[in-house]
Length: 326
Image (cartoon, rainbow, N blue to C red; front, top):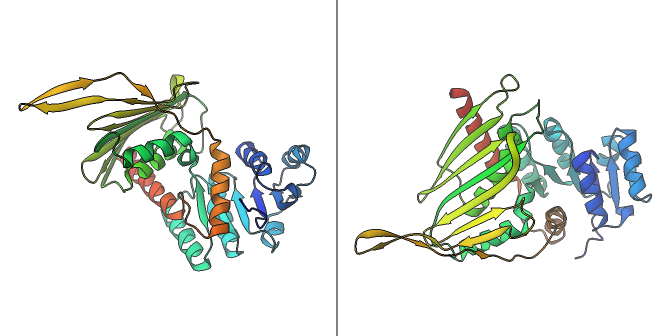
């Protein structure tokens, strides 16, 4: 991996931004990394990691630096559009944490801008770089489960509450991005229902139904009012099923040879023991960053490019509309 040409700026060194900083230090030389944050405390924390990292407080110091050719934006979601527009206009390949923007029209503008400027626009849908998800995608394409029929996902926990967004926007983008990736299509119908208990007009739990071409269906259940943490996705085909539980310490991915087959005109159940599916170990955030750098170095299309992010955002907007119609 030749990353010598990558001169990176990370904008925002808060909780998740700091993870990006630590990860980048495992890929790039510290002198090729610039951190931009208005907080003295955040910059001091970064300096403790490595004194050779460049520290700046003003975005203009990033925009005006001609050597910087890659930017990671890890600031609050409401700032993504404005900052990404500035970095793209300044000629910087741009990675934006999810969601890319809060409005699909703004995401469309960023996508068109990246095309016009011939720059990479990538979004942080990190679970598409999880080795288990990559394995599921590979095996679905290899027909391990036969014809894909149904996907359902639970992403549940107690907290942390958000006051600026509901549970749909906080949790569901992960699952939407995975389902889009596995199906390789856009839904033809989106329906969503939710309930509000703790804060006015901010849903604490939602259930979203997605209908895809070729009779493929999915649902996503998300909640921050749940007694324990659960991250479970089940991918069902006509000859088997995958179960991915990321909260487990072992046996995270299993294959179940279960289903129904027609025998003499009647349906019979087949139900075999599960098998643990091995996948290559890896760090999703490091894989994601390296994927961004590879796209720049090799002029390739990122898996989670601007179009993918726009598709996810449009689904979120349709689901949000459904919540308000109930």
